[in-house]
Image (cartoon, rainbow, N blue to C red; front, side, top):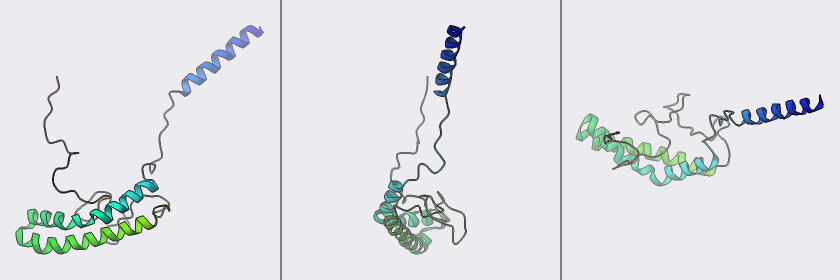
Length: 146
């Protein structure tokens, strides 16, 4: 009888260890936002925040026309650039502290509202500054798969 018990215990332990290898381990929702990402986001906003000016000129030009692009786009782009650089300095100084609701997520809000904006270039700031020119992460070509 002890030999059967020993085999049963060995089978139970081996099944238990093998099934735990298939466990679904997931990171918490805010795990990708770390202090290093906050520091990089702050430095990016400081150094590339001025890219908001030509970005807004181009957006307003396409949407409202040339005169609006060079007048309203210039003013709005300058406002957004200073706002972005202000957030950048704030995030560089406080990169080691989880300041937004105990997380390292970006604190950008929509004109005083309480909801965060992660990617809405018309109403608020995106997490990283705008890029001009060729953006390689968009797939514009067709791919034929056999």
